[in-house]
Image 1: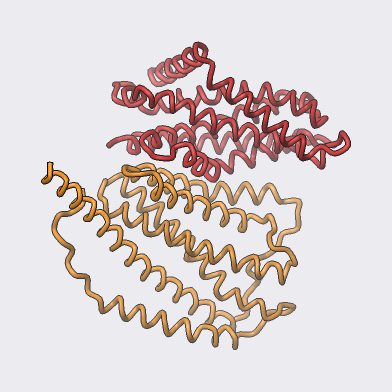
Image 2: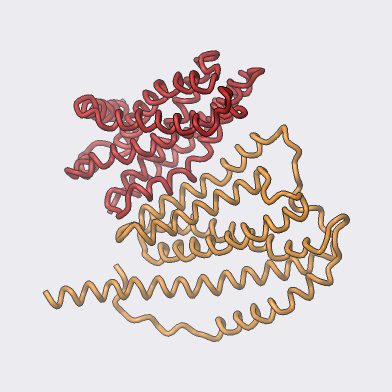
Length: 231
Length: 226
Protein backbone atom coordinates (compact mmCIF):
# COMPACT_ATOMS: atom_id res chain seq x y z
CA UNK A 1 0.00 0.00 0.00
CA UNK A 2 1.27 3.48 -0.75
CA UNK A 3 2.21 5.62 2.19
CA UNK A 4 -0.49 8.09 3.18
CA UNK A 5 1.91 10.68 4.60
CA UNK A 6 2.99 13.25 2.01
CA UNK A 7 6.59 13.01 0.88
CA UNK A 8 9.17 15.07 2.60
CA UNK A 9 10.35 17.67 0.14
CA UNK A 10 13.52 16.07 -1.19
CA UNK A 11 16.67 18.10 -0.82
CA UNK A 12 17.08 19.66 -4.28
CA UNK A 13 20.71 20.79 -3.86
CA UNK A 14 22.49 17.51 -4.78
CA UNK A 15 20.10 17.14 -7.67
CA UNK A 16 20.89 20.62 -8.99
CA UNK A 17 24.64 20.13 -8.57
CA UNK A 18 24.48 16.82 -10.42
CA UNK A 19 22.40 18.39 -13.18
CA UNK A 20 24.92 21.24 -13.56
CA UNK A 21 27.86 18.80 -13.71
CA UNK A 22 26.07 16.71 -16.31
CA UNK A 23 25.11 19.78 -18.35
CA UNK A 24 28.64 21.17 -18.28
CA UNK A 25 30.11 17.74 -18.92
CA UNK A 26 28.10 17.17 -22.04
CA UNK A 27 29.41 20.49 -23.39
CA UNK A 28 33.03 19.57 -22.61
CA UNK A 29 32.79 15.94 -23.72
CA UNK A 30 32.68 16.63 -27.49
CA UNK A 31 35.92 18.65 -27.14
CA UNK A 32 37.61 15.81 -25.25
CA UNK A 33 36.39 13.29 -27.76
CA UNK A 34 37.55 15.53 -30.60
CA UNK A 35 41.08 15.83 -29.20
CA UNK A 36 41.48 12.13 -28.42
CA UNK A 37 43.56 10.34 -31.08
CA UNK A 38 41.98 8.11 -33.68
CA UNK A 39 42.95 4.42 -33.64
CA UNK A 40 44.75 3.18 -36.74
CA UNK A 41 42.57 2.69 -39.76
CA UNK A 42 39.53 4.41 -38.29
CA UNK A 43 37.91 7.61 -39.39
CA UNK A 44 36.13 10.43 -37.65
CA UNK A 45 33.03 8.25 -37.23
CA UNK A 46 34.96 6.48 -34.48
CA UNK A 47 34.08 9.43 -32.18
CA UNK A 48 30.60 7.99 -31.71
CA UNK A 49 32.38 5.39 -29.56
CA UNK A 50 32.44 7.94 -26.69
CA UNK A 51 28.66 7.95 -26.63
CA UNK A 52 27.91 4.40 -27.72
CA UNK A 53 30.00 2.45 -25.20
CA UNK A 54 28.99 4.45 -22.10
CA UNK A 55 25.32 4.19 -23.14
CA UNK A 56 25.72 0.43 -23.40
CA UNK A 57 27.35 0.29 -19.96
CA UNK A 58 24.53 2.41 -18.54
CA UNK A 59 21.94 0.14 -20.14
CA UNK A 60 23.54 -2.93 -18.54
CA UNK A 61 23.72 -1.10 -15.20
CA UNK A 62 20.02 -0.21 -15.47
CA UNK A 63 19.06 -3.79 -16.34
CA UNK A 64 21.07 -5.22 -13.47
CA UNK A 65 19.47 -2.67 -11.12
CA UNK A 66 16.06 -3.70 -12.44
CA UNK A 67 16.74 -7.42 -11.93
CA UNK A 68 18.14 -6.97 -8.43
CA UNK A 69 15.31 -4.63 -7.35
CA UNK A 70 12.75 -7.11 -8.78
CA UNK A 71 14.26 -9.91 -6.71
CA UNK A 72 14.27 -7.79 -3.54
CA UNK A 73 10.69 -6.68 -4.26
CA UNK A 74 9.54 -10.30 -4.47
CA UNK A 75 11.26 -11.16 -1.22
CA UNK A 76 10.23 -8.06 0.75
CA UNK A 77 7.04 -6.85 -0.96
CA UNK A 78 7.94 -3.22 -0.40
CA UNK A 79 6.52 -1.00 -3.15
CA UNK A 80 9.61 1.18 -3.18
CA UNK A 81 11.69 -1.65 -4.68
CA UNK A 82 9.08 -2.13 -7.35
CA UNK A 83 9.19 1.58 -8.20
CA UNK A 84 12.98 1.38 -8.35
CA UNK A 85 12.81 -1.57 -10.75
CA UNK A 86 10.27 0.24 -12.90
CA UNK A 87 12.38 3.40 -13.07
CA UNK A 88 15.49 1.39 -14.06
CA UNK A 89 13.64 -0.54 -16.76
CA UNK A 90 12.45 2.69 -18.37
CA UNK A 91 16.03 4.02 -18.36
CA UNK A 92 17.30 0.76 -19.85
CA UNK A 93 14.87 1.24 -22.74
CA UNK A 94 16.08 4.82 -23.23
CA UNK A 95 19.81 4.03 -23.22
CA UNK A 96 19.17 0.90 -25.27
CA UNK A 97 17.64 3.12 -27.93
CA UNK A 98 20.84 5.22 -27.93
CA UNK A 99 22.98 2.08 -28.20
CA UNK A 100 20.88 0.68 -31.03
CA UNK A 101 21.08 3.90 -33.06
CA UNK A 102 24.72 4.80 -32.47
CA UNK A 103 25.94 1.22 -32.98
CA UNK A 104 24.72 0.70 -36.55
CA UNK A 105 25.97 4.18 -37.57
CA UNK A 106 29.48 3.18 -36.52
CA UNK A 107 29.12 -0.35 -37.90
CA UNK A 108 28.08 0.93 -41.31
CA UNK A 109 31.20 3.09 -41.49
CA UNK A 110 33.61 0.51 -40.15
CA UNK A 111 32.26 -2.91 -41.10
CA UNK A 112 30.18 -1.53 -44.01
CA UNK A 113 27.19 -3.34 -42.53
CA UNK A 114 24.59 -1.98 -40.15
CA UNK A 115 24.37 -5.21 -38.24
CA UNK A 116 26.47 -8.30 -37.71
CA UNK A 117 25.43 -11.44 -35.83
CA UNK A 118 27.90 -11.25 -33.02
CA UNK A 119 27.26 -12.29 -29.42
CA UNK A 120 27.54 -8.82 -27.93
CA UNK A 121 25.16 -7.28 -30.44
CA UNK A 122 22.57 -10.01 -30.18
CA UNK A 123 22.61 -10.09 -26.40
CA UNK A 124 22.32 -6.28 -26.19
CA UNK A 125 19.38 -6.35 -28.59
CA UNK A 126 17.63 -9.08 -26.63
CA UNK A 127 18.22 -7.34 -23.32
CA UNK A 128 16.73 -4.21 -24.80
CA UNK A 129 13.72 -6.24 -25.99
CA UNK A 130 13.25 -7.67 -22.49
CA UNK A 131 13.37 -4.15 -21.02
CA UNK A 132 10.79 -3.03 -23.59
CA UNK A 133 8.59 -6.01 -22.67
CA UNK A 134 8.86 -4.97 -19.03
CA UNK A 135 7.80 -1.39 -19.81
CA UNK A 136 4.96 -2.56 -22.10
CA UNK A 137 3.60 -4.83 -19.38
CA UNK A 138 3.66 -2.00 -16.86
CA UNK A 139 1.96 0.34 -19.26
CA UNK A 140 -0.71 -1.88 -20.84
CA UNK A 141 -1.16 -4.74 -18.37
CA UNK A 142 -3.49 -2.81 -16.08
CA UNK A 143 -3.28 -2.84 -12.30
CA UNK A 144 -1.62 -5.66 -10.39
CA UNK A 145 1.29 -6.23 -12.79
CA UNK A 146 4.03 -5.73 -10.18
CA UNK A 147 4.69 -9.42 -9.65
CA UNK A 148 4.60 -10.23 -13.34
CA UNK A 149 7.07 -7.44 -14.03
CA UNK A 150 9.32 -8.75 -11.26
CA UNK A 151 9.23 -12.13 -12.99
CA UNK A 152 10.39 -10.54 -16.24
CA UNK A 153 13.18 -8.76 -14.37
CA UNK A 154 14.42 -12.00 -12.82
CA UNK A 155 14.16 -14.12 -15.96
CA UNK A 156 15.75 -11.32 -17.96
CA UNK A 157 18.74 -11.29 -15.63
CA UNK A 158 19.02 -15.09 -15.89
CA UNK A 159 18.81 -14.88 -19.67
CA UNK A 160 21.79 -12.54 -20.09
CA UNK A 161 24.57 -15.15 -19.78
CA UNK A 162 22.54 -17.82 -21.61
CA UNK A 163 21.95 -15.60 -24.63
CA UNK A 164 25.56 -14.43 -24.69
CA UNK A 165 26.88 -17.96 -24.45
CA UNK A 166 24.56 -19.45 -27.06
CA UNK A 167 25.11 -16.72 -29.65
CA UNK A 168 28.85 -16.93 -29.12
CA UNK A 169 28.89 -20.69 -29.70
CA UNK A 170 26.50 -20.44 -32.59
CA UNK A 171 28.86 -18.07 -34.42
CA UNK A 172 32.17 -19.80 -33.70
CA UNK A 173 32.93 -20.68 -37.30
CA UNK A 174 32.49 -17.05 -38.37
CA UNK A 175 35.27 -14.49 -38.05
CA UNK A 176 35.06 -12.70 -34.75
CA UNK A 177 34.98 -8.94 -34.74
CA UNK A 178 36.51 -7.32 -31.72
CA UNK A 179 34.13 -4.50 -30.94
CA UNK A 180 36.27 -2.65 -28.46
CA UNK A 181 39.85 -2.53 -29.76
CA UNK A 182 42.73 -2.31 -27.35
CA UNK A 183 42.49 1.28 -26.30
CA UNK A 184 45.09 3.96 -26.75
CA UNK A 185 45.80 5.44 -23.34
CA UNK A 186 45.09 8.94 -24.65
CA UNK A 187 41.55 7.84 -25.48
CA UNK A 188 40.76 6.77 -21.96
CA UNK A 189 40.09 10.18 -20.32
CA UNK A 190 37.30 11.02 -22.76
CA UNK A 191 35.78 7.54 -22.48
CA UNK A 192 35.80 7.52 -18.69
CA UNK A 193 34.51 11.10 -18.47
CA UNK A 194 31.71 10.10 -20.77
CA UNK A 195 30.94 6.98 -18.71
CA UNK A 196 30.84 9.06 -15.54
CA UNK A 197 28.54 11.60 -17.17
CA UNK A 198 26.19 8.90 -18.38
CA UNK A 199 26.05 7.40 -14.92
CA UNK A 200 25.24 10.83 -13.44
CA UNK A 201 22.56 11.19 -16.08
CA UNK A 202 21.24 7.75 -15.16
CA UNK A 203 21.06 8.74 -11.50
CA UNK A 204 19.27 11.99 -12.34
CA UNK A 205 16.63 10.36 -14.52
CA UNK A 206 16.34 7.53 -12.04
CA UNK A 207 15.57 9.85 -9.13
CA UNK A 208 13.02 11.77 -11.20
CA UNK A 209 11.36 8.57 -12.40
CA UNK A 210 11.31 7.11 -8.94
CA UNK A 211 9.62 10.22 -7.53
CA UNK A 212 7.13 9.99 -10.36
CA UNK A 213 6.36 6.37 -9.46
CA UNK A 214 5.91 7.31 -5.83
CA UNK A 215 3.60 10.20 -6.70
CA UNK A 216 1.59 7.94 -9.00
CA UNK A 217 1.18 5.36 -6.25
CA UNK A 218 0.03 8.07 -3.84
CA UNK A 219 -2.40 9.48 -6.39
CA UNK A 220 -3.89 6.02 -6.93
CA UNK A 221 -4.24 5.50 -3.18
CA UNK A 222 -5.90 8.90 -2.80
CA UNK A 223 -8.28 8.19 -5.68
CA UNK A 224 -9.28 4.90 -4.08
CA UNK A 225 -9.78 6.67 -0.75
CA UNK A 226 -11.91 9.36 -2.43
CA UNK A 227 -14.07 6.67 -4.06
CA UNK A 228 -14.52 5.04 -0.67
CA UNK A 229 -15.63 8.37 0.81
CA UNK A 230 -18.17 8.89 -1.97
CA UNK A 231 -19.59 5.43 -1.55
CA UNK B 1 7.33 -38.52 -5.19
CA UNK B 2 4.31 -36.47 -4.06
CA UNK B 3 5.54 -33.66 -6.28
CA UNK B 4 5.68 -35.93 -9.32
CA UNK B 5 2.25 -37.39 -8.60
CA UNK B 6 0.71 -33.93 -8.31
CA UNK B 7 2.40 -32.77 -11.50
CA UNK B 8 1.21 -35.95 -13.22
CA UNK B 9 -2.38 -35.35 -12.07
CA UNK B 10 -2.22 -31.79 -13.37
CA UNK B 11 -0.94 -33.04 -16.72
CA UNK B 12 -3.63 -35.74 -16.82
CA UNK B 13 -6.33 -33.13 -16.08
CA UNK B 14 -5.15 -30.92 -18.95
CA UNK B 15 -5.00 -33.87 -21.33
CA UNK B 16 -8.51 -35.09 -20.40
CA UNK B 17 -9.98 -31.60 -20.78
CA UNK B 18 -8.26 -31.24 -24.13
CA UNK B 19 -9.39 -34.71 -25.25
CA UNK B 20 -12.99 -33.71 -24.57
CA UNK B 21 -12.85 -30.21 -26.05
CA UNK B 22 -10.09 -30.62 -28.67
CA UNK B 23 -10.11 -26.89 -29.44
CA UNK B 24 -6.58 -25.95 -28.35
CA UNK B 25 -4.72 -28.70 -30.16
CA UNK B 26 -6.79 -28.29 -33.33
CA UNK B 27 -6.07 -24.56 -33.38
CA UNK B 28 -2.35 -25.12 -32.73
CA UNK B 29 -1.87 -27.76 -35.42
CA UNK B 30 -3.87 -25.86 -38.01
CA UNK B 31 -2.10 -22.59 -37.24
CA UNK B 32 1.34 -24.23 -37.42
CA UNK B 33 0.46 -25.77 -40.80
CA UNK B 34 -0.67 -22.35 -42.04
CA UNK B 35 2.60 -20.78 -40.94
CA UNK B 36 4.54 -23.47 -42.82
CA UNK B 37 2.41 -22.96 -45.93
CA UNK B 38 2.94 -19.20 -45.88
CA UNK B 39 6.70 -19.75 -45.51
CA UNK B 40 6.69 -22.27 -48.34
CA UNK B 41 5.06 -19.66 -50.59
CA UNK B 42 7.77 -17.19 -49.63
CA UNK B 43 10.85 -19.44 -49.59
CA UNK B 44 10.34 -22.11 -52.25
CA UNK B 45 11.37 -20.96 -55.74
CA UNK B 46 11.12 -23.34 -58.72
CA UNK B 47 10.52 -26.28 -56.41
CA UNK B 48 13.67 -25.58 -54.38
CA UNK B 49 13.87 -23.97 -50.96
CA UNK B 50 16.06 -20.86 -50.72
CA UNK B 51 18.98 -21.97 -48.51
CA UNK B 52 18.72 -24.14 -45.41
CA UNK B 53 15.55 -22.57 -44.02
CA UNK B 54 13.66 -25.76 -43.08
CA UNK B 55 14.98 -26.03 -39.51
CA UNK B 56 14.25 -22.40 -38.78
CA UNK B 57 10.74 -22.67 -40.18
CA UNK B 58 10.03 -25.74 -38.07
CA UNK B 59 10.97 -23.78 -34.95
CA UNK B 60 9.18 -20.60 -35.94
CA UNK B 61 5.94 -22.49 -36.57
CA UNK B 62 6.40 -24.35 -33.28
CA UNK B 63 7.07 -21.14 -31.32
CA UNK B 64 4.07 -19.35 -32.88
CA UNK B 65 1.65 -22.19 -32.27
CA UNK B 66 3.15 -22.74 -28.81
CA UNK B 67 2.30 -19.16 -27.79
CA UNK B 68 -1.18 -19.63 -29.24
CA UNK B 69 -1.65 -22.87 -27.32
CA UNK B 70 -0.39 -21.34 -24.08
CA UNK B 71 -2.80 -18.44 -24.44
CA UNK B 72 -5.78 -20.71 -25.11
CA UNK B 73 -4.81 -23.14 -22.38
CA UNK B 74 -4.72 -20.39 -19.75
CA UNK B 75 -7.82 -18.69 -21.13
CA UNK B 76 -9.62 -21.95 -20.37
CA UNK B 77 -8.39 -21.79 -16.77
CA UNK B 78 -9.42 -18.16 -16.52
CA UNK B 79 -13.02 -18.56 -17.64
CA UNK B 80 -14.12 -20.26 -14.42
CA UNK B 81 -11.17 -18.99 -12.36
CA UNK B 82 -10.02 -22.59 -11.98
CA UNK B 83 -6.29 -21.89 -11.85
CA UNK B 84 -6.86 -19.63 -8.88
CA UNK B 85 -8.64 -22.53 -7.19
CA UNK B 86 -5.75 -24.86 -7.98
CA UNK B 87 -3.23 -22.42 -6.53
CA UNK B 88 -5.34 -22.16 -3.38
CA UNK B 89 -5.36 -25.95 -2.99
CA UNK B 90 -2.80 -27.62 -0.69
CA UNK B 91 -0.97 -29.02 -3.73
CA UNK B 92 2.62 -27.88 -4.28
CA UNK B 93 2.53 -24.82 -6.53
CA UNK B 94 5.68 -25.95 -8.27
CA UNK B 95 3.92 -29.20 -9.18
CA UNK B 96 1.01 -27.26 -10.67
CA UNK B 97 3.45 -25.21 -12.74
CA UNK B 98 5.37 -28.27 -13.95
CA UNK B 99 2.14 -30.14 -14.76
CA UNK B 100 0.87 -27.19 -16.76
CA UNK B 101 4.20 -26.91 -18.61
CA UNK B 102 4.19 -30.65 -19.37
CA UNK B 103 0.69 -30.33 -20.82
CA UNK B 104 1.82 -27.56 -23.16
CA UNK B 105 4.92 -29.61 -24.04
CA UNK B 106 2.68 -32.51 -25.09
CA UNK B 107 0.56 -30.21 -27.27
CA UNK B 108 3.65 -28.70 -28.87
CA UNK B 109 5.14 -32.15 -29.51
CA UNK B 110 1.95 -33.30 -31.24
CA UNK B 111 2.04 -30.12 -33.33
CA UNK B 112 5.69 -30.77 -34.22
CA UNK B 113 4.86 -34.37 -35.16
CA UNK B 114 2.33 -33.06 -37.70
CA UNK B 115 4.35 -30.10 -38.97
CA UNK B 116 7.72 -31.87 -39.38
CA UNK B 117 6.52 -34.25 -42.13
CA UNK B 118 4.78 -31.33 -43.84
CA UNK B 119 8.07 -29.39 -43.86
CA UNK B 120 9.94 -32.49 -45.05
CA UNK B 121 7.61 -32.66 -48.04
CA UNK B 122 7.26 -28.98 -48.89
CA UNK B 123 10.91 -28.03 -48.35
CA UNK B 124 12.44 -31.32 -49.44
CA UNK B 125 14.22 -31.54 -46.07
CA UNK B 126 15.66 -34.83 -44.74
CA UNK B 127 13.89 -34.54 -41.37
CA UNK B 128 13.58 -38.31 -40.97
CA UNK B 129 17.33 -38.93 -41.26
CA UNK B 130 18.16 -38.76 -37.52
CA UNK B 131 14.83 -39.12 -35.75
CA UNK B 132 16.19 -39.52 -32.21
CA UNK B 133 18.23 -36.29 -31.91
CA UNK B 134 15.50 -34.37 -33.73
CA UNK B 135 12.82 -35.66 -31.34
CA UNK B 136 14.99 -34.80 -28.35
CA UNK B 137 15.64 -31.29 -29.64
CA UNK B 138 11.94 -30.69 -30.21
CA UNK B 139 10.94 -32.13 -26.85
CA UNK B 140 13.54 -30.23 -24.83
CA UNK B 141 12.97 -27.00 -26.73
CA UNK B 142 9.21 -27.25 -26.25
CA UNK B 143 9.63 -27.88 -22.53
CA UNK B 144 11.91 -24.86 -22.07
CA UNK B 145 9.43 -22.72 -23.97
CA UNK B 146 6.49 -24.15 -22.01
CA UNK B 147 7.96 -23.71 -18.53
CA UNK B 148 8.63 -19.99 -19.07
CA UNK B 149 5.27 -19.69 -20.82
CA UNK B 150 3.42 -21.38 -17.96
CA UNK B 151 4.82 -18.89 -15.43
CA UNK B 152 3.85 -15.86 -17.45
CA UNK B 153 0.55 -17.40 -18.54
CA UNK B 154 -0.36 -17.76 -14.86
CA UNK B 155 0.75 -14.24 -13.99
CA UNK B 156 -1.03 -12.72 -16.98
CA UNK B 157 -4.42 -14.14 -15.98
CA UNK B 158 -5.51 -10.81 -14.53
CA UNK B 159 -3.82 -8.59 -17.12
CA UNK B 160 -5.42 -6.58 -19.85
CA UNK B 161 -4.26 -7.38 -23.41
CA UNK B 162 -3.09 -10.84 -22.22
CA UNK B 163 -2.55 -12.43 -25.61
CA UNK B 164 -0.33 -9.68 -26.98
CA UNK B 165 1.67 -9.35 -23.78
CA UNK B 166 2.30 -13.10 -23.58
CA UNK B 167 3.99 -13.05 -26.98
CA UNK B 168 5.89 -9.86 -26.14
CA UNK B 169 7.30 -11.41 -22.95
CA UNK B 170 7.74 -14.97 -24.12
CA UNK B 171 9.85 -14.61 -27.27
CA UNK B 172 12.72 -12.53 -25.89
CA UNK B 173 12.93 -14.64 -22.73
CA UNK B 174 12.92 -18.01 -24.50
CA UNK B 175 15.43 -17.02 -27.19
CA UNK B 176 18.25 -19.20 -25.77
CA UNK B 177 16.05 -22.31 -26.16
CA UNK B 178 14.89 -21.26 -29.63
CA UNK B 179 18.46 -20.59 -30.80
CA UNK B 180 19.66 -23.96 -29.49
CA UNK B 181 16.74 -25.79 -31.12
CA UNK B 182 17.12 -24.05 -34.47
CA UNK B 183 20.88 -24.42 -34.69
CA UNK B 184 20.74 -28.06 -33.58
CA UNK B 185 18.05 -28.88 -36.13
CA UNK B 186 19.95 -27.11 -38.91
CA UNK B 187 23.04 -29.18 -38.05
CA UNK B 188 20.96 -32.33 -38.62
CA UNK B 189 19.52 -31.08 -41.91
CA UNK B 190 22.84 -29.94 -43.36
CA UNK B 191 23.98 -31.44 -46.66
CA UNK B 192 26.82 -32.92 -44.60
CA UNK B 193 24.91 -33.85 -41.43
CA UNK B 194 26.71 -33.02 -38.18
CA UNK B 195 25.13 -35.21 -35.51
CA UNK B 196 27.93 -34.26 -33.10
CA UNK B 197 26.88 -30.61 -33.21
CA UNK B 198 23.25 -31.60 -32.78
CA UNK B 199 24.11 -33.60 -29.66
CA UNK B 200 26.07 -30.66 -28.34
CA UNK B 201 22.99 -28.45 -28.70
CA UNK B 202 20.84 -31.13 -27.07
CA UNK B 203 23.11 -30.90 -24.04
CA UNK B 204 22.93 -27.09 -24.14
CA UNK B 205 19.13 -27.27 -24.34
CA UNK B 206 19.04 -29.63 -21.35
CA UNK B 207 21.15 -27.12 -19.41
CA UNK B 208 18.85 -24.22 -20.41
CA UNK B 209 15.78 -26.25 -19.44
CA UNK B 210 17.31 -27.07 -16.09
CA UNK B 211 18.16 -23.41 -15.42
CA UNK B 212 14.68 -22.25 -16.47
CA UNK B 213 13.12 -24.97 -14.30
CA UNK B 214 15.17 -24.13 -11.22
CA UNK B 215 14.50 -20.39 -11.51
CA UNK B 216 10.82 -21.07 -12.22
CA UNK B 217 10.36 -23.33 -9.20
CA UNK B 218 12.32 -20.93 -7.03
CA UNK B 219 10.35 -17.84 -8.05
CA UNK B 220 6.87 -19.26 -8.71
CA UNK B 221 5.74 -19.45 -5.10
CA UNK B 222 6.73 -15.82 -4.47
CA UNK B 223 5.38 -14.65 -7.82
CA UNK B 224 1.93 -16.15 -7.24
CA UNK B 225 1.57 -15.04 -3.61
CA UNK B 226 -0.62 -11.96 -3.30
